[in-house]
Image (cartoon, rainbow, N blue to C red; front, side):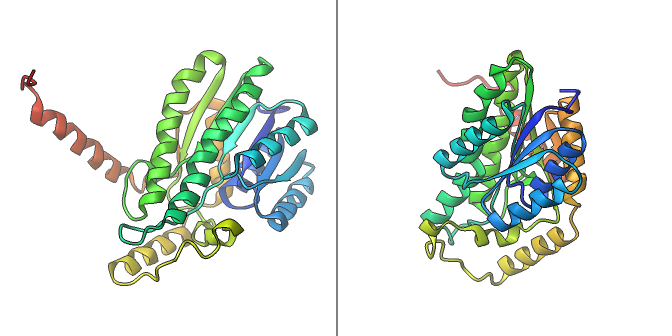
Length: 282
């Protein structure tokens, strides 16, 4: 999708952080953007902010962890713009905690927003992008934690799922004229650490947050400091715009964790080396 101007994009988690950065970059490139978020007041402000730049934007509130609300948001987008060319599955929440702190509600919420909503986004918007025959692109926000695991297992599992889904879809959708990219950001200045501000009422009181202590507290402090010094979301938005225009399969924000990923791949290679030359038992 070399020419974004005049195309229509649907962006989840668009009221702040990376989502707003992406919506800003796409609108500045001439795209029409439907902003989708669960936070009504933040959504209103984001829409006003972009409209002040003469961007062609609209907004729809939805809890993307509920498929019916995501479908309603798609209907609203079609009613407003008639077509959709670009889907950005960006909404995400942090949390879930390490082993020993898990709850069913934490797993359900984290997987619901971070992975189920991405699957549903593709299921709902994919046919809409195909229908006009003008091509399109899907970007889904995973994380560098979708390639190296540690810390919050529910979060990591959800993000690994987004990477796997994106890699498979890239192969399946290319013949249909739809490009697919997965965004794997490192630290970005967002409000990911205060995700529970958007906890649905149906899950209120069920996450049972555990106050971090010992090594866990130190790890949380390091993450918080990383987020505070992280990349500007507007910079990430420009990277995503460039990734769409050039059909990048992976979009990274920096090289901070590259050596960790190299170590993971090396460990995988060692696993193959250990059995090289052996004849499997029959």
